[in-house]
Image (cartoon, rainbow, N blue to C red; front, side, top):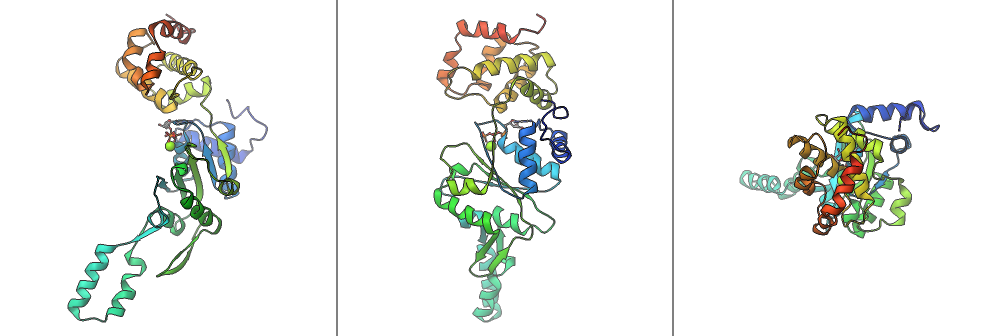
Length: 306
Ligand SMILES: Nc1ncnc2c1ncn2[C@@H]1O[C@H](COP(=O)(O)OP(=O)(O)OP(=O)(O)O)[C@@H](O)[C@H]1O
Ligand SMILES: [Mg+2]
């Protein structure tokens, strides 16, 4: 969609952010640019959901680039706990300090207060995000659905107060409130309390035009015709019943593979050889028997000179 002719809700500020995202290689649309603008302007966390490979993580990366700030990423996983996400004590350095103090015959209490000071603290992403002095960073809390409920409750508290208490040091308040982007693939439902605190953006698979633009941007070596054929083929594929629907990531990989194999157009031989870039499930590969592939290829090549 052409943003400059597009939606009524697009203000000059949204347009400016949209253009910044585009300058950094991201093909944005009014919905994405508006959600990012509001999240940064209202300083509210933005929760982004959508299928795998639709560009959720990339949104946060490119937002940081467009704002000219640092991206701090916390990758969530099962078992991630607050301590690991916040800080750890630099244990080897503390031990070294203790040994040196013992050799020098210093008082144990003096050593103890020293080794629990800021110099011995290893800041992990969440603490780093609130102590950055140069300005607010973009804090990406990626795949928050993979973390447990307990971690989500802790996040909720952090995102309300932007302060943390370290028993040995006291309370540390945010120097600047970071821009926060959370992503989820919905492997677990995010709780209502966290949802309520965030603005929400659902990224759909791109439509044909947007996908062509993404492919042209990400694989500039591909001709417009090839990008069009790939996009048309992938769009048709997404309408089929598949176990793993290909995302933008897969269509980019596939286009790159076709270019590397010097395929100017989609044909049965080239597609069969490279289908593993696009489909990552055995049953999905079987879906595309020669009987179904032929008509899909013919459809995808419509509009391209033969
Ligand atoms: N709108 C876009 N403009 C340019 N590139 C895009 C766009 N959307 C996705 N991409 C590209 O597609 C790939 C996948 O994007 P990304 O990793 O952000 O997806 P994701 O939604 O986070 O996937 P997952 O759920 O698997 O983590 C990246 O290489 C990214 O650069
Ligand atoms: Mg991601």
